Amino acid sequence: MKRTLMLFLLAALAQAHAQTGAPQTIVYQTAPNAAAAGTARLRVTEVEPNGYAVDLTIVASTPSRHTGHVQGYATRAGARLVAKVPVFQPDGQLDRPPLCTLVIDLDDARAKVLSEEGCAPFHGAGASFVEQGSALVPSTHP
Image (cartoon, rainbow, N blue to C red; front, side, top):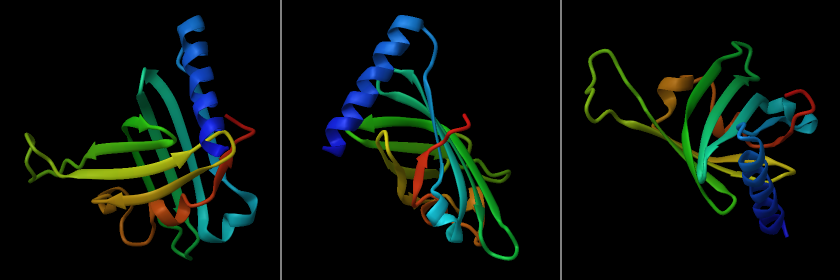
């Protein structure tokens, strides 16, 4: 059922994009009952068929309130988005930088960061895209 709803939502976004020519954005935020893990805001904008701009911001619930932020391009496979964002470092390789890989499941009722690999440079040790992004719901404030 969730997969059907997600496919319907993504098809509706694609149709709206084709009709208006304007990118469509869905914004998710931390569910009220999940605030103990910290907060997160996820913006997903369709920029082309099967191509999405992803913008994820987090704040950990720790006393230090560590933050994290990553933006990148994601591709879709069913209800799953996979973003691979280059991690450029001042002394690192420019031709083949390491990647931060985020896997996000989403539908019209929720979003959840399932996994992250190589993303610590975007949030440090005191926060986690997976922990803070584990229970997201559509935002009422885009």
